[in-house]
Length: 135
Image 1 (tube, rainbow, N blue to C red):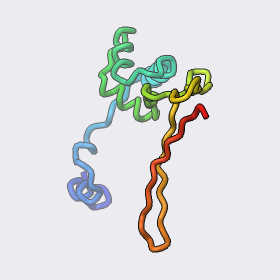
Image 2 (cartoon, rainbow, N blue to C red):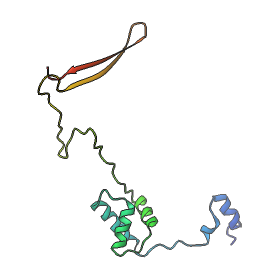
Image 3 (tube, rainbow, N blue to C red):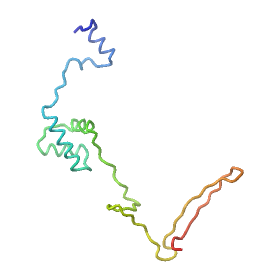
Image 4 (cartoon, rainbow, N blue to C red):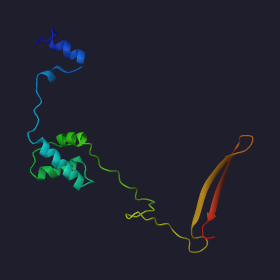
């Protein structure tokens, strides 16, 4: 097909496109909007689920879709699974309160900190400070 006096081969090479993109018109699904709405609804309802589990739930609900198609919609909509909170060493609860261990007797709760400074001639001076919190 010669449009503008340039061959398809040359035009595609200049644009950096593959020639097959010019021959096949992508056929979208007729129910793409409903599928996207269902994916977003399931993602908001089940916030910890990823696109693979959502794809399995959609298949169980009767949708005939591929997991790769679900992933493309997932990325297009900007959906993400939030990162988990670290379980180790937490000082907070779900209600936002903070629990710290209160000292009940001497040698019960200790705190430590490293302090670093430089002397007047530029040498490093490091100290480990250890404090009994009961006092």
